[in-house]
Image (cartoon, helix red, strand yellow):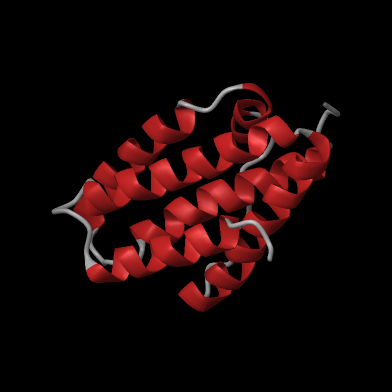
Length: 134
């Protein structure tokens, strides 16, 4: 297992935090966002090893603020790159990363009145971005 560079760690973090952000913003509502943030931090905190190090050290990712489409265009490719980085440098952590990101996305969706259709659609996009390439 090779250590991840700061840029690689930021890619993992951008994917994970961005996924949570996408699900959180799929359905509007400030009160829900607070509950969702707490739910997501619990899931991301369950990470271990290389994944935990990437998600808990270094700077926070800078996500576009202009539109949900711009965020999606940043986050979904970052998830795919994160899987590629882990497959190359720490193959044993690929599934852990997928699990943590999907668990965080799911907890965010569940945190406020159950999973809405818009949240389910975003989670499907996240799952697809994390999938092995054909």
